[in-house]
Length: 269
Image 1 (cartoon, rainbow, N blue to C red):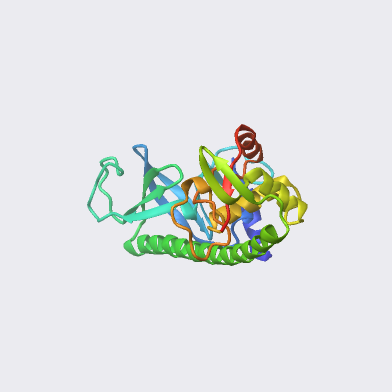
Image 2 (cartoon, rainbow, N blue to C red):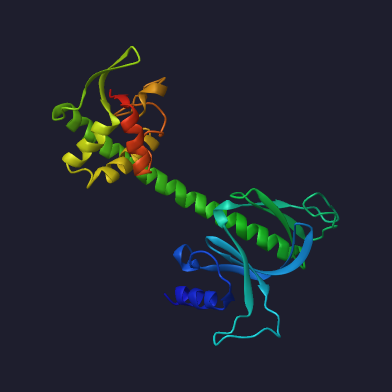
C-alpha cells in the first residue's frame, strides 16, 4: 500500500500528465534515471521511470517557470506499456537512420510496437546501458509468463464450461438441429443468436451481452468454432464451429447487426 501511495504522490508532481494513473497497472518502480533521447532528428535529455508495467519519460521543468501549490518539477512527455516495448542494442561508434546521423556510444534502440516508432536512448556508461536493457527484457519476460499462466487457467476454465454446455445442449436444448446454408447441410448445428439467448435462459449468462462475451471466450479457446472455416475437428473439442471470432465479437451492437443480416450457421460434435 505504501508503494502505491508513493507512486500516486510521484505522479502528482508531473505537469501535464496524460492517460490513466500509473497505479492502475503498476505497483513497483524498477529503475529511473536521465538518458539522452534521439527521435525525429532531435537529441534531448529526458528523465525515464521504468515501472513494472509502464515506461514514463519526462522533461525537466525550467527553474524559472511559475509554480503551483504542488510544485511541478517534471513535464510529462510520453508513456509506453512495457509489453509494447522492443529493445535492440547499438554497437558503439555506429550510426543509422534511427540515430539521424549521430554517432552513438552506450546507446540502444527502443521501439513502441503499438505505434511502430523507434527512438534511440543513450546512457552515461556502458554498465548503465546494460542495466536498462536487462531491466526491460526481464519485465517483458515476467509479463509474458503471467499472460501465459492466465491463458492456461482460462483454457482449463473454458474446457470445463464447454463440457457442461455440451451435455446441456444435447440433453435439454431445443436449439440444436440440422441447418442448411448455401446448399450445404450442417447436422447438429445452431445459430449464434439462438446460442446467446440459450445461455441467458439456462443462467450461464446474465444477459445477451454477457452471452456474447462467453461465446467469444469459447471461440478464442478453441472450444467452439465457426463452421464456415472448419477443416479439422479437434479430438478434444466439445463444440466445433471453425477457427474464427468474427461473429462472436465483444461489440454487442455489431454482433446483433450481423445476426440481423443473416443467421450464423454453426455445428456441434
